[in-house]
Length: 223
Image 1: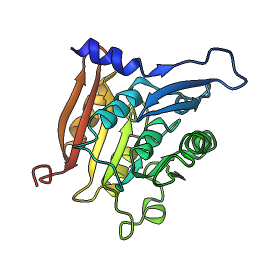
Image 2: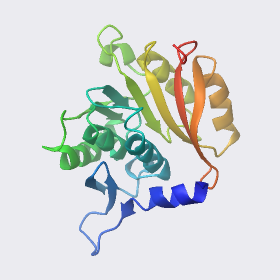
Image 3: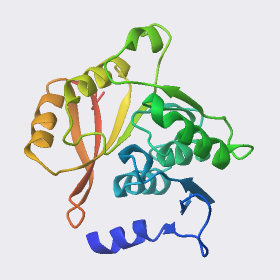
Image 4: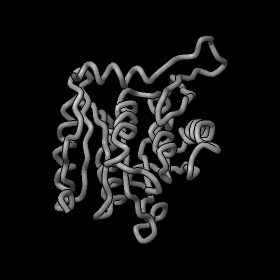
């Protein structure tokens, strides 16, 4: 069953018939053909399988995870695929990443959502743990969903990542987080994450070593 679903997810990706001036990949989600421009010299400008897993979940679970008119923020948006799919499904989306990635992110978001979405998504800089209250004040920023795909890997900013989750998450915010287990650091981060949040695995793909989680603040999952 895992391999069948994985094959269906990966089957949503297609490639151009001819070599283009700019490298791009195509995807079929939410009833649209999505074209993503990539940059092979940067991890954040490549579409990784975890983004496809999260997009597939959003599309195939649109009834129990209804994004219409919901306020969504994606952290580590990269090329923007997840943000684009969430926008096409009716959400008001804020796609965030580091400043050096915003140009490509903005290009992809605009190219694939203009005049196609109920709410035009916005792109905003977010460096984890830096100027959070200034750029995303708790008093005025309320997100129904926080989305993240492949944000936990071997890098020195896991403390800042956890701080960012904590700052953006209200009592009723739902976190949807696709994660690939690679090294012990990832397992340690999950343990630390669970000191602040209740965590539930909602999909598991052993053949990809990927899990999809739903999380909320401690004690809020059942409520």
